[in-house]
Image (cartoon, rainbow, N blue to C red; front, side):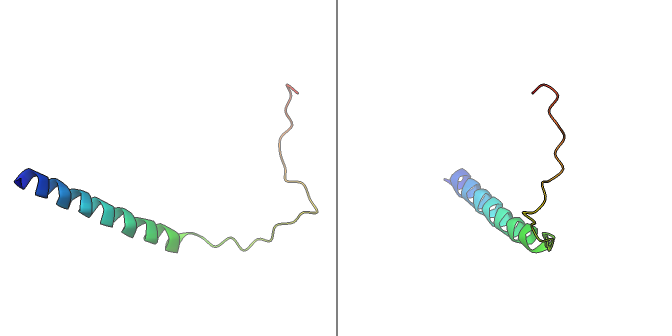
Length: 50
């Protein structure tokens, strides 16, 4: 029974750590302020096998 409690606590700790790291990644994500232009095609290399 003690092993199950330990595994449960460990998995709960891992879930909490994953949630915290996900929130940190969301907050630290760089803001992309560049506007999307539909006037220009993006620079895509040509496919020589086409």
